[in-house]
Image (cartoon, rainbow, N blue to C red; front, side, top):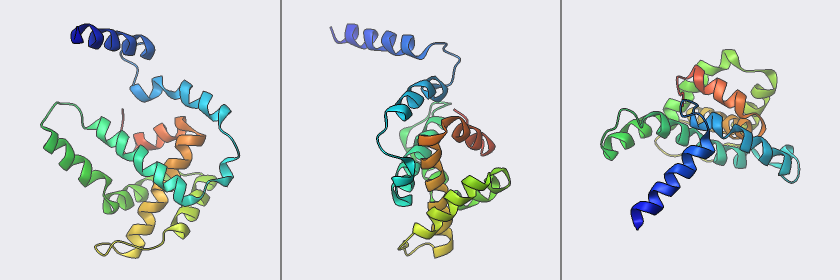
Length: 160
């Protein structure tokens, strides 16, 4: 009985995603754009901290998805993800992205940097601010321009 439910869920999932060769996140871009049209208020009302909170989750999801193949032990996935999403790595990623950013994106980075308050003891304030800036930008793009988010993540070789 359980197998039937699992098989039905799997078939529902494959039907909703369309072409199997299409990346998972691209298949969901249409759904995100529909959500954009329904979201209340204005994007400018979201604080940089809120955008960073969302951007942290988005970045980790993309990174986790990237490391799924080839299959390995969960502890190995975890080690790879943690090394990539830690603040020091995010600060380095931001350096790689900076030449490709628009003026609007640089403004979002500045908002995120200025909103970074407090700092874990193991980090310098500057590294923490850069990581928060990147997370703010990713949160902003996730809501406002998922296609651009995908493009920037491709520059970092985080391709899903």
